[in-house]
Image (cartoon, rainbow, N blue to C red; front, top):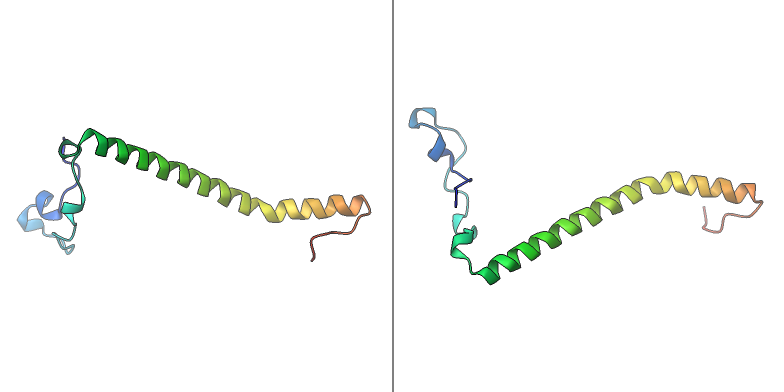
Length: 90
C-alpha cells in the first residue's frame, strides 16, 4: 500500500522546519488494509458507505430546511386565494 499521510518532518528538509508540531497524529489509530482481515475490510467499506449515505441524507435535509420558508409563504398564498384560514398558527 502506498503511504499517503506524512508528518511535516518527513517532507520538509531540516532547514525548512515548520511551526506545526510533528508526532501529533495518532498513527496507531490508522490501520493499513494490508494488516486487516477480509472481514474487517468489508466492515470498513460498509461503514464508509453508510457514512456517505448519511451525509447525503443530511445534505438533502438541509436543502429542504432552506426551502421551507419560501414554501410556507407560497402555501399561505394558496390558502388565502382559496379563502381558507391558515391552519398552522402564525
